[in-house]
Image (cartoon, rainbow, N blue to C red; front, top):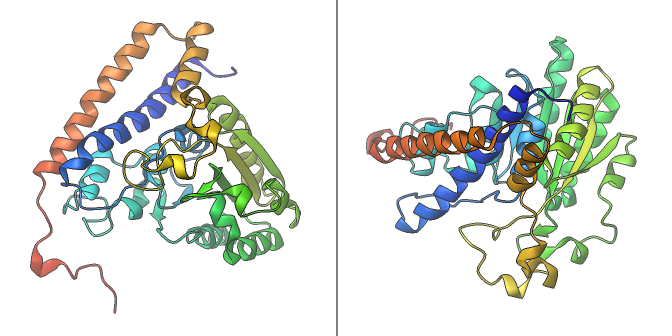
Length: 322
């Protein structure tokens, strides 16, 4: 790894933080205190971390309904995110958006959309603004494989290529759109080929391996920032849970047989941790200390959310536009 010990620790902390936050959400969600649907990214954490670790604070990120990892990896405020899940006034969207509409413009997380492919044209627009101003910002949009079946995806790639805009299209390909597998929806599963139709450079990364994502994302983001135009990055990953909610009820009815085998699952946290220990990049005691510190941070964030006030009834119309 061409990374310093400090960078390795920072990457591991971001990775385990996303994992533990979502595990805590899954643990407490049955209490029915979080009044919002949740879409967990367990198994996909390496994509968020590998991409966002190359971005500057002022760079733009546009997310989708599976937004927790993107929000945290870009530097979003954890207590504000958890408060948003509880629909509290202290939430990052003042309790009005919930899990699928996380936002933190102060760190460049410009918003998340529950509309499939909804954030893709927003990222192209932000990239156009950056190009017009000449401020050297990059826009990144995260989306799933199903978003590539929407017309706006193709329209966005065309405009980005035509104007050579600094935007990186990141597809988290977990092979499922709700319960429908990619092979049942697409005649050609080589999603990188879609970008080739617009002469956009395309890369593919192992979405379960943080270092693979880190390497490919670094190349893609550097190219976009240097004025070479848009780049497409496909990250092959596994969605450990169902489309929404906790667990994966009924998975036997739609998952491939190999997906049902626990041995088939590849854990991004364990893969990265094992590489760290095997190459003596950090002692196990330091890893354990990070885990413990993250646990404390998460406990404090949930306590903050639980104790925060709900929006006042007379103010529920705030932030609405007529």
